Image (cartoon, rainbow, N blue to C red):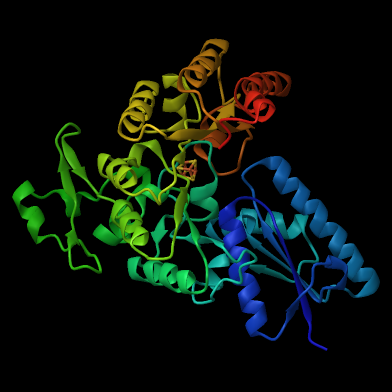
Length: 411
Ligand code: SF4
């Protein structure tokens, strides 16, 4: 009888997509899947550490499994992968690895997700809708976010590989594609200039970019499958060079795949939502009209502390610009309440922004202090939990509850 594996996935769709590749790896090793953790020879826990509560739940689950293994010798092997392990392998001090070894003693293997690679064709549960990762990691370093540490710097998959995957999926009967990345609309910036030139905090390597505008034509850039070459551009109003992303071209090319009927993407950063991207969405009715555009806060002071590269005015302008070009568009968002030092006045600016924009849905989170982040090192998690909860509740009542009750306008 073949051995059985079970995968428990925590966190976002990116983790779900990673688990699909892990499943594929196990199938190629002759394992079969079981839906019952109690019957599995190998149990893989794909972890998330976006919030402390999620992380603690994982420690609880793993330790219960370890007890069961000691008692019944099932499962034979416990493997922990995902963000917690990603964080441990990137922490050069080794402290975090020692910590997770201590908190989850009895685990047989800590597996960095990178070791699974993209060579395994994901084993998808859905037969119509495919989630396709287009990049991994993030270079934005929002001060509250653990992703640049747990997943590392943004690495884009090859343009052609993604396009080929879409074509292949369409032949297999898939009709809906969701492109996944921590920041999909910066997809390809590293392909254009080389990953070593895409710097922390989105600053550019001076040796690469300290060129005269006319010298840009000698920059190699990135050659798209149709022969066009994309190079860094000079953005006049910012008075600096900016790495163009390949996302608008990628979306546009995926829309040309015959049998694909609907193309969605998540998540996008307002900073990288270019005019070119808006025009591509407008031109292609296959592309979603429900755009997820995380705002995080409506206060410029909080946005600055969060290292989000836009102001509330720029965010609102962007929403209006998109609405003007694509009148039937709806927006969902992410909001963090109770971020370090968030005053009543700053919070109320978020409430005002929410009312002004009229989101159809929001993922509202109470700020959770995460290791290694700038906020953890520099700021104080000083908004009491009770107040965070109240602020969370008020926004829920403004955005999510009415949309659920009225059953309209839902994303
Ligand atoms: S854009 Fe900011 S919030 Fe999103 S993954 Fe990157 S660092 Fe985290």
